[in-house]
Image 1: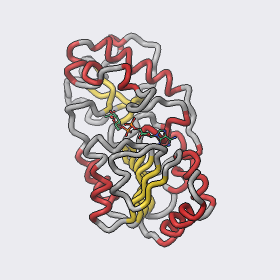
Image 2: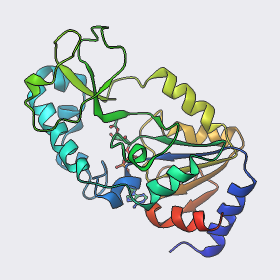
Image 3: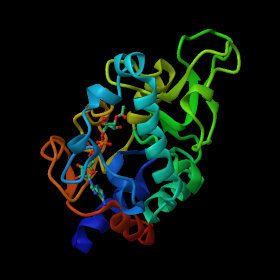
Image 4: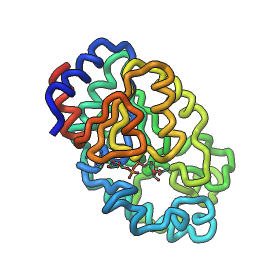
Amino acid sequence: MAADATLRELASRLLSARRVTVMTGAGVSAASGVPTFRGADGLWRNHRATELATPGAFAANRDVVWEWYQWRRSLIAACMPNPAHEVLARWSQRAGWCVITQNVDDLHRRAGTRDLIRLHGSIWELSCWSHCGGRRDPWRDERIAIPPAELICPSCGGPARPAVVWFGESLNAGDVARATEASRCDVFIAAGTSAVVYPAAGFIDVARRAGAFTVEINPEQTDASSAVDLAIRAPAEEIFPRVDRLL
Ligand code: OAD
């Protein structure tokens, strides 16, 4: 249980800030029932990332990779945004307040978050595997009960892939630029992330170097815990509503 005084300090920092940025990771969706990647029940405990979330894996066995993504899509489809998503959606309406996410589940979007920066894409969007150029931007496709052979690029008819960032791939340069800019803020909160995947984890340093008051919200200690100004060791779905009530 985080102390009231700690949360009052955070609230007062937020109230005097001009620019506030919250970066979220899988832990923010944990209370919604979406599995995280690392930790006791994390996806990477039972699945080898290199066999599922890499371009090489897709090239070698498209059906297996699609089966895994369709399983995750069906699981996420049954999940609802939790109080952390709801508070962040409200905060995103404030001028100068911004949400960056590493999550591909779209729960921030479903909660109504404005101007969301999605660093790792969306599991509900597809893109052309061969970059045919006919469709520059990913397109939405929420069909789950469909054979992988029918998930094709509407432009060239070749295979479509989940429009998420896989290991070994670069993030969208425009998203990184927007996130870097957003990280140069007055208060930067990293919530529900193990802070080990870059470049996302590096935005905490960008914020600190820009003079931001940095905060972590996570029930566990992470690589970022000792580097932030305030580490709140508690679940995001509990802390965001409590801080929100103090604003
Ligand atoms: P991780 O699974 O690495 O870390 C989740 C973090 O959430 C852990 O530090 C948990 O302690 C914390 N956590 C768990 N429950 C929480 C709660 N209720 N409130 C707050 N925190 C909680 O997930 P990410 O850091 O998001 O990449 O992982 C980063 C990237 O690695 C993901 O985006 C994914 C993965 O490989 C791609 O898909 C490209």
